[in-house]
Image 1: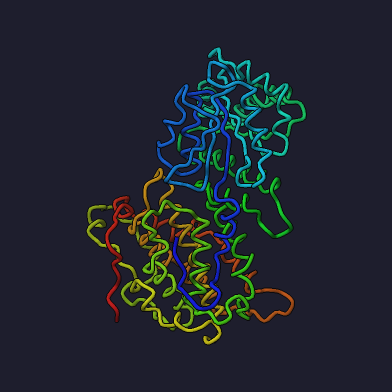
Image 2: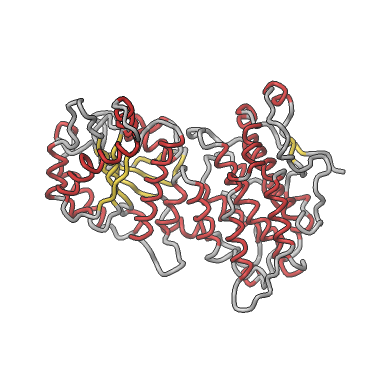
Length: 486
């Protein structure tokens, strides 16, 4: 992680890093028979490749084993292969493990969530919803799950949907939902009595409709984790924040995490600069940058997002808000009426040119202290909003990378897409004209949150730009190429 500049003063400490000190990983127990699809579910939910498969091989699961993967070390999972002795674990072993974890003193060592995974029994296939051990657990032992966010995950939803299509149902999704309620939800509710369980059906296949179901699982998990580990109002718990960090499905949750962390300290009182007394702007931007990038938790082993080059690009972009950094004359904003390119070979010949010189050393305005620069809060507003939106675009561009390392090509593509967008132009115009002198409220914070919640993915010019970016550009890992200075 990026180290903030050394100083004789008390260093500005990242809020995200303080939260991670208390709880560095989201801890989840995944229960289900071998072959039910747990490995694929974990891969998709937490943005990793097939590295989990070995941990789900029959006979190899050890519920006590903490599985931490290098591609995303913000979560740790425990695996239990169902409840049958033949699966290598019994109800008693699962119950004992959960009970022991509940007694742990530190929240980082406790279980934060449990996913109970069951295969959907397809009509006519002679399948059972629950093995005998699972029925016993649900009837007799669900009390052990009290105060642990627990979700029953019904797997292989795509096979149920295919069955409904073959049955020529007028509305296959509605028919599938009715089947789930009758043959999946209701039996488990009957077995489990008054247990606080939630339900969602998912598939391992990737398409927009089925992807929404995995997002629903993540949203539901975060909602239950937040309710269970909540602190005082407007103060996020470390468990809630690390849950947001760990998941790699929902950009909306990443945005919410950025807001939750930012509003605790460094996004507040920007007009007075109370958090930044006697600190240089470079130091102030560094801690804000670390907080936001930390929440988005990309697989970035080379730390491109923490590099001086990338932070210099973001600082230069923020500097355009008042003209202290000139807009690039070489690259104009995207014309949303321009046709989508249809000749990828020609596109690939063009290098990824960034509109500013990379590196913090060239950002003159960032060398002053916070209180030396008039109207500095507008630059900080721009920096925060721009960075969140660049990362949201990057998140969408790399959504199907399955744990691949982040490249400079992907970062440059995301930056250029946002820089040339109509949205960026409108956001900067809104910040320039913003009247923050309203007594009794932190109107700057309110405006930042409002602008951050505007999703660039919904903008037509950005959606069009996505289609013009070939996958080969995202894979490039050349140096940071910038436009010649004027």
